[in-house]
Image 1 (tube, helix red, strand yellow):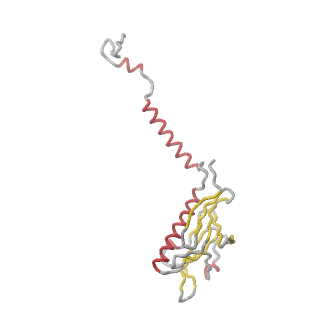
Image 2 (spheres, rainbow, N blue to C red):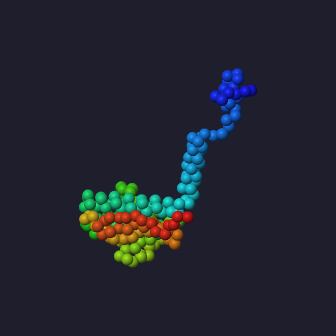
Image 3 (cartoon, helix red, strand yellow):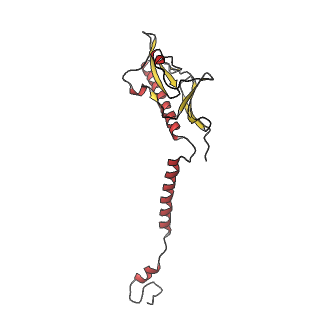
Length: 193
């Protein structure tokens, strides 16, 4: 079937011309590449090839958020708080000046004992000394607690470094608190693979 220069066949239809066009346009190729890139990116993030431990990062960020909230509450309500750490979690206490004792807060789920997801562990450094933390909270210790970190009603805080990690040699997420109550979150040892 003869075709003219304009692509119109002798019988006037463009069907014959379209049958010969079998390639992809540039726009179709770009869309396909973009879809593949999205799927590859999702796969990389879900596998954790980026080199960081997302669970330990989330746990460290949660601890930072709760500490910031407790510090604000200490300032607003003129209350002193304490934090007792173990390798598997932490719990908050308030100081009762009448009883001269640390008491577990009642009716505040945010300040209840919190266990971090296994196999993550906490480590604590106070005054440049790494403390030996119990694996779990000892029931006797909970009756007469002695928190390692204090959050005072003046906004001041015991300077400390809390580390959350699965394997400290592979990397860890670190909370560093200053005496003025500021807390910074950083990481150490994670490398892109």
